[in-house]
Length: 236
Image: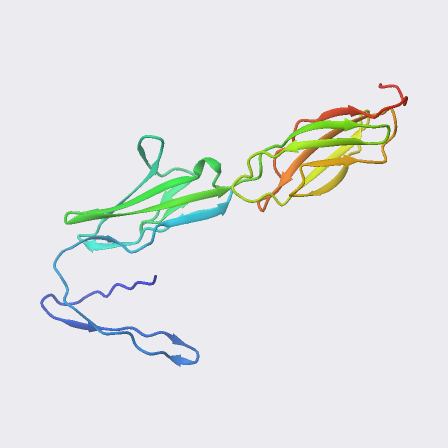
């Protein structure tokens, strides 16, 4: 929605107003004409729309709250908590601009929630509600060992919270227990188990897993250890 404030009009006079879009190809058809008469005082009215805004974490987000009214409205932002609305105050991470826009810098998961903008003057008030959804990397999966053989280890996992964005896949890393040479295996987002093949018999392995979404890689699971069957090298 676009808006434009016409100033320096005379009270008691009527004005006919219309609009048309202009591009490089020319001017389009004009809108229907409206007749207005400037009023001495106008109740507060918010021109911006509420709704849902989705953003990756660590970005700057702007929640608009443009308003009109005479006298000029005052703007107040609040954030809903479990049982009350907490006023949003300016600090190093938050700023309320002169046009009513709330600026949130380097947003994190805890910034998600419902924000209410209220415009108030002596003749009334108006409000909008904005639902901010901050997407973060996925939480760590819970990784377990299902079965082992002389040459394989089968793993299973339960994904953690997806961080507000669908999981796009998993990265499984494994190494021989007494080394730090990790090998990566990329696994489809639909899988909940995987078998590591062609392993050495009687050998201890370390394994860890992380999920990925549109924001990035999430927290790595706890490292688990498993041993293939058979007699192999002794553990150091």
